[in-house]
Structure formats: structure tokens, C-alpha cells
Amino acid sequence: MHRGKGMKFVGDSRIKANNKMPNVPKDYSEYPGKTEAFWPNFLLKEWLIGAVFLIGYLILTVAHPSPLERQADPTDTMYMPVPDWYFLSMYQLLKYQFASGPFNIIGAIIMPGLAMGALMLVPFMDTTKERRPFKRPLPTAFMLLSFAALFYLTWESYVNHDWDKQKIQGAIVEEVEFDTESEGYQIYAGATCIGCHGNAFQGGLGKPLVNTGLTADEIVKIAHDGQGDMPPGTWEGSDEDLQILAEFIEGLKN
Image (tube, rainbow, N blue to C red; front, side):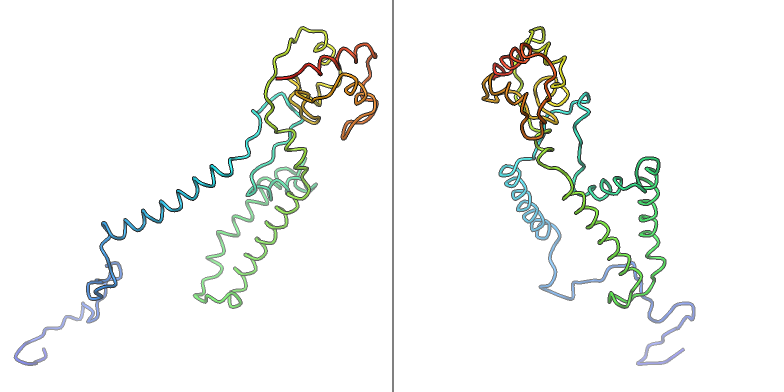
């Protein structure tokens, strides 16, 4: 016991003198003017900021619509889909010989699994409280290596892809009515044209054949001499069939 100012204080060795409860939040009432009520003051500010971002996203959506492509066609084996930008690195990785074909499981599962496993182990391998990057070589090196790998693979995938051909393949083409029993379509279906230009003239490896603005004679000339990616000598049928086909394509208009 200790005597002091007429009061007696009893100490208990089982209770610490400076017993602090870390899970109890601090009382900020002693800081007037530096705090505010959650409702409605703080929450109203959050709503206002959220509304500004929402309006901004809506304006961007209206000003720059999503670059939609034509409806997916499971019968079109020539179309090459490309993932969104955040998966381009994985898309590029699967193009390399050591991660594709018979080694596809390496590029699709093993390598990404090792990278994710290393990322999960970093907090256990680096327990220092130091915040300066050069004082933490392990996580800093891992971060720089990951960034360099993702940047390189994404860049390689972007610059090596034929985006112009992708745009043509995915272009939304307004459908045109035609008679599948007509002689012109029968010739078209039996020739090699359908493999590049699609069964509904929507295009694919080749350009769409609807509303071309070409005359029958111009179409015949292109079939013989070629144009763009279409090599010369593609047509292997008779001149009579080609003329019928050219007149049929000339009439494909909306």
C-alpha cells in the first residue's frame, strides 16, 4: 500500500499499470474540429465523389462505345480471337515453343503457378519492417522482374498481332437476303471463295462481299489478277461460272 493525499491505492501485480487495449479505437473527441460524423457528413462526401466518377464513366461510354464485333460464329475456323489487354502476356507466352503444343501445360499451369506461389511466399521470406526498396532486395527484385516480364510479353503480343485483319474479320456486316438455291450461290458454295469470304458473304480471311460497289467485270478481273491478300489465279472454275458468280456478287446489296 502507498499513502497519498488521504487516499489509499491498492496495487495488483496481475494487472499492468499501463494496460492498453489495442483493439479499442481511440477516442477522438479530444480533437474538436478534426473529426466529423459518419452520417450524414462523411457518407455524403463519399456519395458525391462516387457520383462524379460514375458520371465520368457514363460520358466515356457514350463518347467511346465498346468496339463490338460481329456475332460469334462457331463454324468460322479462320477467326482468331484475342483476349483483353490484361491477358495478352499469357496469350503471348503460349506462342513460344517451350510453352505450347505438347508443352502447353507448362505455359498454362506450371509457369503461372510458380509465379503465383512465389508471390504468396514473399511476405514470409521478407519480414523486415524496412520500407526503402534498396533495403529490401528480395521483394524489390521480384517486383521488377514481374513487371519486366509482363510488360515485355504484353508488348510482344500487341506489336506482332495483325490488328487490321482482326478488324476486318470481326467487322459487323449487315446481312443481305439472297437465294441459297440460286445458281450463283451454288457456284460460290462449291468454289474456294466461301472459305475466305464466309457462307453469308460476311468476310473472314477475305473482305465482305456485300455492297462492294464493284461491277461484274471488275469482280472477274480481281478473281483472275488478285487483289491485296488475294493472290492471282485463285479462281479455278470456268469463265462462264465466274461470270455468273460475278453478276450474283454484284447484286448483293442491302
